[in-house]
Image (cartoon, rainbow over all chains, first blue to last red; front, side, top):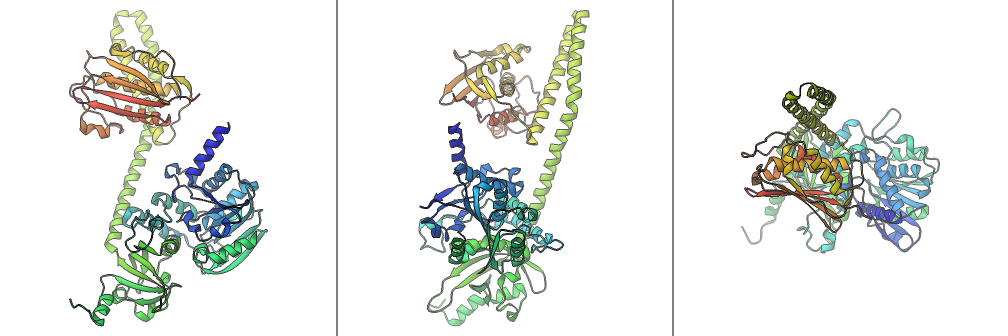
Length: 271
Length: 367
């Protein structure tokens, strides 16, 4: 029985390319958003490694995850991605962790926290949105036609004319001074899976789940974020009784990349 | 070309480049654009100066840029072949690919982003055609699967009724008219063949629908092989099969009925594609944590051209010397699916004019 458990833990760790680091005891779980992989945390992980136990992973289909494990049925909704999060918690025997999610991962984390609340102590939501499409009385930021435009572009991408989502080619001719270590591929996603993930993410509506969050939550809202505009951050703050809304100086959708110091400081202050 | 090109040379090189050049400040505003970009996008310089580059993109393109390009730009300082849609001054959409590189600041200048932009109208039109063609092919494939599922499902019940009804009838006929037994025997074989084909088609449609399941339990591989041989025994050709059961049982985790089906398919193929005077050798070898079941015939072998297609649905090997060309060409397809569900493998080794050996590997049940 124990051997089976050990075997399945190892397979989850391999499947999601889980990396555990850090000298501290308290686990902090970092979940990347759409279009990237765990390498996007590389600028803020160092801020936590001395004092906490950092856990980062790739969703199936991203980074160095096991693409063969992709199952259209499982990942047809964000619940499948929430399951990845919970599988990892189970494999590492994690309870009461701090969940740090970016973009769509915030919703996956919220769903996971509703399903198994004991796994989490608090949630940090970077640039979250429960629904991207505008509705009566709700501004998500986009019309359905905008999302269709994005999905169409992703389809074009997939044909291989653009390698935006393919692994970066080794031997970067434009930057010869980079060492071999740095020419590894960043933000890899499988094009087919990325299309499906985009469809699942941008057409979903999880507004009703936002109010069910019981854990204390920190919403990191950027200025001028096209994907998760300020009105969405405000909406989430209103819906979540136990939440704090922090309006950052950082602009754009990835403050953990464009303003890592500010992001790390805000997260640490939340502990 | 001069050794030291003049200022105007570089000016022209930049302005009239065969691609668009843009320079952005770190906050994303346009600080420089070359003539090529201006003429492609139909903007005047004053309309672009200090505007955000992302303002020129369609909404979908902005999302793609924020989700894919920006993170990689932060991590790698350069992104190549980024796909984008730009809105020109006249409202038309210009599909582009661009490269973007971060240029750190120095004594002489501010940090900036530099872009090289290529319009890809023709390429995008071609992509659309490819996508449409792919969609049509997918629709056709779905329709085909639905058709298969429907037909095999509808045929299953009547064929099963005929099979059973005929068997009863055949028994009674035989009791009354024993001399007619040859006819009833022939008819019984035809009905059984029909039943087997419809069942196989139904299995294939289940596989295509992702609904094919196996029911696993501990079973003995040699029993399974024997069962398959026994099921073939009504055919006189089955006498050609030679199987020496191993001294001890070989335990596997499997679906006994489905594994027997696999063995039957392999044995039937061996019987079909070899002369009537040859034997079929069945051997089992246990190594590491696997059992290898080998079925060897001294038959006609398989042509090299046919090899890549062996496991495809509805592909039949046309063998000029074989007496029996019947079948739907789905046996090996089914066999491979069943074996894959058992975490095993199947491989075929052949030499034309010499014979064929089929090796089936199934993991052993771990103790």
